[in-house]
Amino acid sequence: MTRAPIGDATTYQVVNDVLAAWMLEWQAASLPGRIEHIPEPDDRGHFHWLVRLRGEEKDYITIWFSLRQRTVHVETQVMPAPEENAEDLYRFLLKKNAELREVHLAIGPEEGIYLVTQIPFGELTRERLDETIGAVVAYTEEIFPTGMSIGLASLYRRKKRP
Image 1 (tube, rainbow, N blue to C red):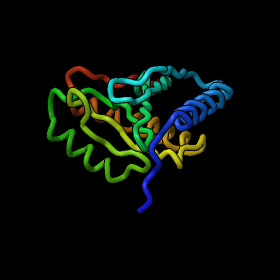
Image 2 (image 1 turned 180 degrees about the vertical axis):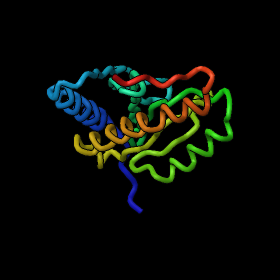
Image 3 (image 1 turned 90 degrees about the vertical axis):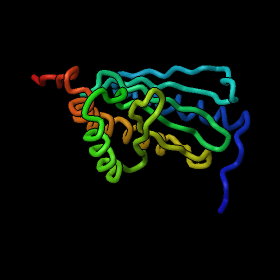
């Protein structure tokens, strides 16, 4: 098995350029969104970018991109930790996880529900990034209302559409 190369300054610039090019195309299509970048690495040496997009079911979808040793880690919080019906929610999510492409569901910080994936450096192109972001947005919009209705039923009311 061939492993992805270890990232360096060139890899950092490639990730930055690919994300910037993707965002320009997104905005050229008159879609609202923005990208933020933290120019200094965190305490583990990882660089981070944050893409914020408007959703329909979920008002904002925030996607974190973290440059790790050999990959770009991608994650978004779909919903916070369930406060009720946890078993029913996890059953729903496990069934949904089997249908997902490009990403998978996971329990993340503070027991929240996340969509995550890893993209090896050599596979990071604008097209691959677009597919990954498209999957994250589509699955978040699909899972969010049902997940919230199950796991936070007493707090969540689905938006009424005109």
